[in-house]
Image 1: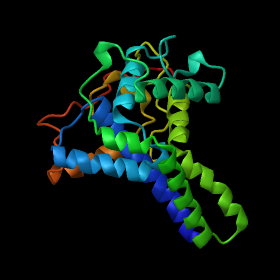
Image 2: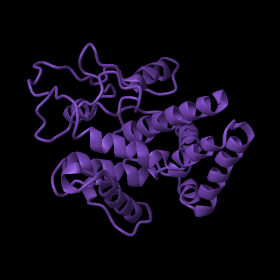
Image 3: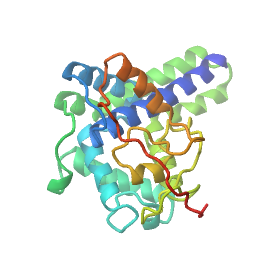
Length: 256
């Protein structure tokens, strides 16, 4: 049971870390820079740890930029305001993502460009053969280490980890929690210590300071991914710049 628990925690943490670090903060926002060699390393790491949930960086970046530009309006690709439930929201998001990732839909010019691309890896990652192969690896691990049959019921979580992350962040981050800023949308900070999604649930702060690598804005808030980024910057893997934009709260909004 211990091996299964450690595997679940490790896969969840590494999957959401590379989603927020590489796809969100790097591909979509370019909050930091890194060499082409390190970009390739992070590209592969994101694919390995996200597995069948890996999202093509180009499609993710365009989708996320649309979300910021049209936050909680009818043109937002994943706002809770536009859907009857979280499943409907995620299905609509999936449809938009599919069109972008397979280049069936061309994005608005203002959302295009400035993201990393590796077309060979992108094609591989979106193939059903590789998705099923990842699933087989997960099942193999559980068959080797599970101590009870019911533990095999956890396997689908590994295969659907990306959509689960997306559902939590995009639904809860625009429905539940508190606001530090009036952004003109429904973005909220769901958790003051966000280890669950590695800082992604500081949605209200992030929508206020879209280029800040630190999603935390108040003294009691903690963004774990930013702390890792500070270490990566210190050892020269990434460059946050001389003075990275950091969110600050001049006036706390009364609405909770």
